[in-house]
Length: 205
Image 1 (tube, rainbow, N blue to C red):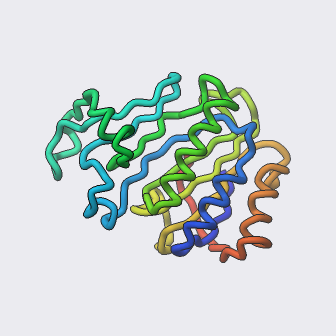
Image 2 (cartoon, rainbow, N blue to C red; image 1 turned 120 degrees about the vertical axis):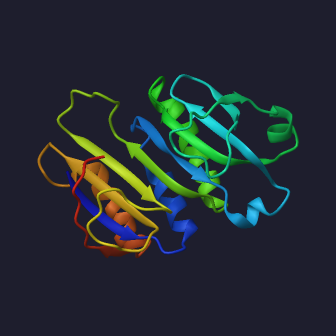
């Protein structure tokens, strides 16, 4: 899989512009976003509440019944959260999770996921997001992915370029970026003036 990287710096507006420029024909979103410390220290965020946006037609707030710093092997229990505090009281969740959102009704649900992602990235949430042109297990020989690496570490990375980054990846087809990714890469280079980062990869998304 080939990749092109651009540095995002701390430019939330550029990150949101990339999300909003993704084609409506794309199929799904996966990833997790977490509220910044500044929001967590305010009364705007409800701690330990995660907004879970599924591929199965539903959006639900859930709580994590676990202990901070617990070993990853400990099973995480999901329960219904206080929906009133999240929506009626106009609060924000501690985390937002996307579970291949969009696969059930591509254009409609992908647009919902995109709007959620754009909103939370725009107010400072960080984490990672993968936007896919294809559904899972697609028979297409063409794969295209837009990945936002907003915090943490990129698995399999050979170089230690500071985050946040946007990555455009593709394989199959004619071998070049293709019409879809060409438009997104042009946006980064010619309109947003983002710095291209040379980078090596040893894994497939």
